[in-house]
Image (cartoon, rainbow, N blue to C red):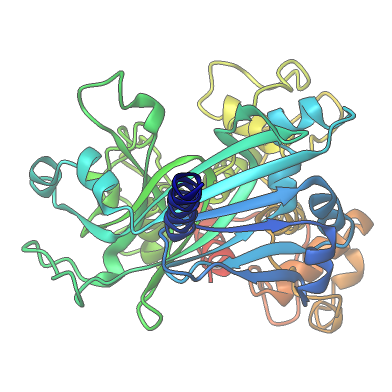
Length: 439
């Protein structure tokens, strides 16, 4: 009998230690409808995962996703080293969720962040190679994102691509615990980069892609929108457009290489958009004085939002040529609802975009990014003498663009809804947009 009791005590002790060990390695939360309802703060459902473990596990149940979509709430999670704001539509619109949504089994999206994942960036970011390119990683900023869909408590599929953006505030220790590197790159030159873990076993050279983002040196954080599972790390470089190994940016000219912007008033905005991967034009000239087209504006917004490529609308617009660089981005913008065609079958890609069309696209892009559109106050817009000439379908967009400061008047008293916009002017507007959605 004594031997049996002793054996039971040993088993209990081992089980207890195992439980403690698991608890010590994972900081987790399961969010159902009631938890979501009870933690509403304004437009957000705000929760914390600020325990010691680096692994943060967020289980988001189907009824919570439905509640947040119905009530236009986003999920904000404070994880101490990073903060994330998740649009529930980014969950609902994944292909994996859509394929199971009508089934009888309740769904759950299990999202895991591993913060301060320094070993991961150290493994795939070759300091020796990248330092020679003038790129220096900030190890403490590294985090890994993984996700899986579960149905009825069972694993269904790993999720690689989200159906929208996740806003991340990534806090850095640059110049505190980690010295500013030999290259002398200051913190305001930090940008977020991405590594696709799926490529790790298939390539010999690991490629890090520029995500971009905006830097707040007071709060010591970089804010960026992401949409894929993988490894993320902040990297310092004096010239991201030139040194980025982003496969989409390999053809991007280096900052300052545009020969026609040296003395242009929008030069800083153009260079900023280059540095975060929004502008990756292949030409040696930017043509800042030329009117921007509908396709060009759509391409820049797709890049600014980091939208997942989708060409399922191929064939819908008869005037989109597969030979054009804008073909896939234009279809992607249409798929995600950022732009509509001039008609059901016409995109009019090379028509100059009007100011009221731009305003509507900005409103849709703000909705896609999950940020406020500036309220419903028409006061600022009505100060323009020609406000009544704005098309009915564009009123809300014009109000939002003016209230958020993205678009001003062509004069103090005119909005010029049907007016055209130069590429330089558009760069300034999109620069303001990027900073607005990432602030």
